[in-house]
Amino acid sequence: MDAAKVVSVEDCGPDGFRWLTLKKITWQDPAGRQRLWESAERTTRRGEVDGVAIIAKVVGANRAPMLPVLKQFRPPVANYCLELPAGLVDAGESVGQAAVRELLEETGYTGRVVEETAICVSDPGMSNANMRYVTLEVDADAPENQNVVQQLEDGEFIQVELVPWAGLLQHLQVEMAATGCAVDARLLSYACGLEHAQHASGGLEQPLQQAGPPAARVDGSSSCTLDSNASWGPLPFGSPIVSPLSSSALPAAATLTCSTQQQQRRWPAFAAGVAAGAAGCWLVLVGRVR
Amino acid sequence: MDAAKVVSVEDCGPDGFRWLTLKKITWQDPAGRQRLWESAERTTRRGEVDGVAIIAKVVGANRAPMLPVLKQFRPPVANYCLELPAGLVDAGESVGQAAVRELLEETGYTGRVVEETAICVSDPGMSNANMRYVTLEVDADAPENQNVVQQLEDGEFIQVELVPWAGLLQHLQVEMAATGCAVDARLLSYACGLEHAQHASGGLEQPLQQAGPPAARVDGSSSCTLDSNASWGPLPFGSPIVSPLSSSALPAAATLTCSTQQQQRRWPAFAAGVAAGAAGCWLVLVGRVR
Picture 1: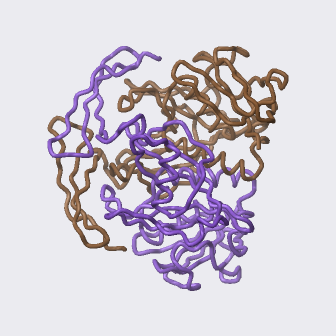
Picture 2: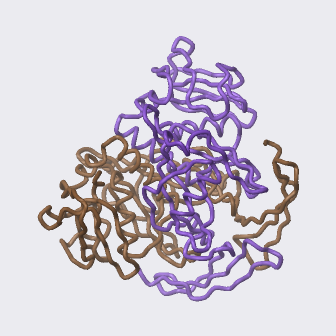
Picture 3: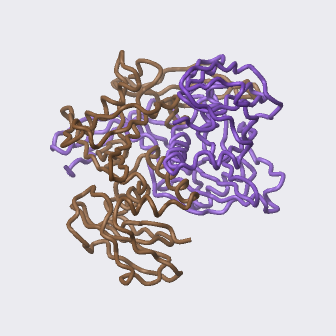
């Protein structure tokens, strides 16, 4: 079972492409048979890794941890996309240095490296794209992290949202439903991991309560519809959670429906609060009902 | 800031490619300027989504939750790769149905759908590849999940490893270091999310103790080198953790070095146990020293 290997690689990119190319790969399967595989590759890799993705935990005294999430237009998916801060590693730069530099440029925050993962691959059935995750800690109380300003290059248009770390999955789901934006699979799976661990430890409610007012809790099994155009307050886009919807405004619900211009989404059995922002109204989910 | 959009897409794939193509995208940035972007696309999408990735939590009475992780050769990265079970969605099939089917085929386990995420994108700076995560629960005590057998197609060569859910990140890091295999970014970021949440809640040690014997704990700041060719027992490849390395065999260490044929990796300040398997020796990390 360990005999698989690449036999040859044929470069087949069309002329005129600068950043991407296609490869036709001949490989030998574990049974010894030769097969073909098609792959896309970046032409820009300088060292062993294309880039870094940055998990930047913003911490400070008397505040819940926050995570900077970026929103930018991505032509390949023809949509705005929520992502971790990320970037390519420059020549002569370590992965940690690249992470600190990219976080500063994209968000204005100065962080210190806490850990780096090994190299991982973004979509290994389709391309050779690879990266490392770097976890940074940002001291929100430090002088350099007051009134931070992005340092974007010409042609970069990046919105920064500071999201409660413990409510990351809920924030992503709500913003996708409310605005129709896309989300990067790496950010979403990190959020799933956070949420699954919090759920398993029974600790889901506690971090969310640190991030905002206690939420209404929903019990039972009937249905409830919330109008996502309703407004519960003038929170700016990207605000941390949230005006709670009082318990009395909800029936004993187990299903909530959120209608947006893009789609109708239904969530089973969440408690909910609602916040209004510049991009529309958010349905904020704050705790699964067991 | 919301004016960015795609203007036109030019198909530029070279002849003879069946599964992939390249696109040259003209898009308008938020400032109204037209720019070019290069993208790779699969030619196989039938509906709105390419595929599913499966987080399958195997649970049962009196046992720690486990997660099936796959290992298979991936020609684009010329390496074996650790991944979540995954697959393409067939025509006429829901995402949940695809997840249940793929898990059964790739691992032999029968699961039930617990949740599905919205669509997310694997590498939106490079391609339009997208997917949904589906979380399945597998009842390890159910009759259909005893003595499970994979249902692989001709040409599929997939090893299944059942990994302690609470020790996922450690397992991935150890196996990558010991065998030089790659890891999928989506699996690794899920593992990072789990670990970060467990670490934040102070619950990191407890689930690991459920999964195996209590581990030696390392305190202090000196160094220690472990020979990864050493053997501490006949555990089969993929075994849950692990023979603990007794405290007396470690100095009061804060840095552990693990040498393999592929690379030398150093971890700051972990406690460690070591297990031997068919693929070589694992250095098992079981708790960060503060």
